[in-house]
Amino acid sequence: MLFKTTTLITVIGAISVTPVIAGGGFSASCSGASVSGTTLTANCGNGNGGSRWSSIDLNQCIANYGGNLVCAKNGGFGGSCSGCEIRTGVYMICGCSGGSNPTPIIDLDNCVANYGGNLACAT
Image 1 (tube, rainbow, N blue to C red):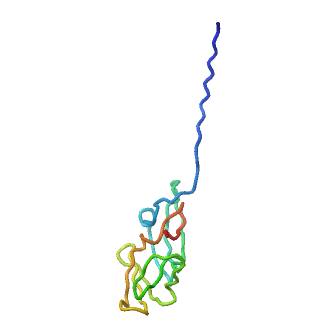
Image 2 (image 1 turned 90 degrees about the vertical axis):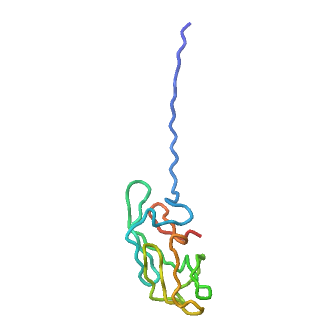
């Protein structure tokens, strides 16, 4: 009897757009972060060895609650804060009204993620 053995090798690769860093942490895969008005811009890795410049309006990600900047979807912090700057890597400081803390600081890594080279809100 002659037996033929046929071997079928199938390689299945799943490609999906997943966050480079889930739940925030954009700074682990982005560099050159800067803020102009309420817009954050950074050069971000795309997860495939490349990178691209990406921007996001932080009004989509941050709110001013009583003088404290917090991560919040569609927070609109820019309505009561101005003069924002990046300090010490990913910490943003702003001049804000409506609370006891006129110069709140927020860690943008808690609010912003890098999804395949695109900045997005982590919340």
